[in-house]
Length: 176
Image (cartoon, rainbow, N blue to C red; front, side):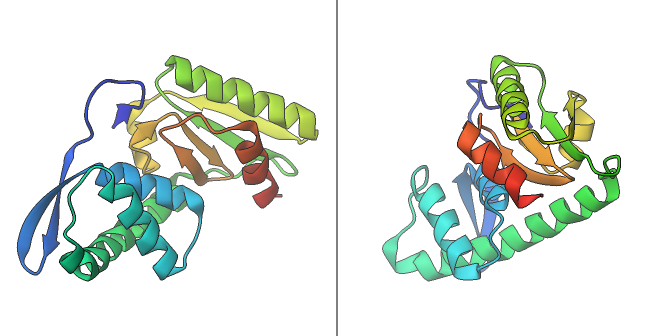
């Protein structure tokens, strides 16, 4: 896991395509970002993954279908692990309250996300319990690999960025 304000490059991911191991950059980050979109449409998932990963990796046009299938296969495993971890670690919020967690190590972006969340919650008049999670092991158990992360009612909504107030409002509305 790394903070998105860190100058470190994302790790190298080994992707199996037709029995060959292909190195790719930014796969975990792409998985996390696509997971936060909340879509289950396989064509949309594959398209999002390819679009994000083509920015950092060379993917030959003649092999797009093979990459699409391999990325979708790996993403499904990643999403299943993340959902299992969320169920295992998600605590129910007190009755009538939304549970919002800011996942991060305390960097400037983490603080900016927390401030934006608090402002949106206040503007919307939502009853919410807002907590910071700074324990790296606890953050990792949620499936978040890049901070800051935003979790609402046990569901990861964003990772690796400071969500806009409009995005935060949309995430909250999805959980109402």
